[in-house]
Length: 138
Image 1: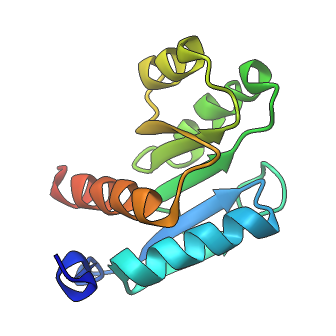
Image 2 (image 1 turned 90 degrees about the horizontal axis):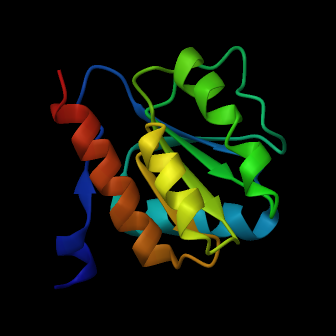
């Protein structure tokens, strides 16, 4: 499948789709920007260098959270994100490969829990799926 066939525009709705990345570093920013460029059109991106959601921004469609190694304590931010952005799909990125963290995150309502080493094309497909899921949801 060519790159042009893999891309799709998900920004045909009433408002632009947005992704907010929390605890973003340079490496993650590059991966997310490349994933959006390769797989999504017309998607806005908001970056935060900590775990706070931007106050003035509209509620994002996806919140991507870059978790540090102490994943257990950071899962406590999931309920706060869900409270402030109930319609957002939350995707957690972690360096931990502990299956119990993944299970707990999914049980708590996260859309996905990915390894921090995720590649651009893999992240692009996950983001595209999350945005598509959200668009078709009531």
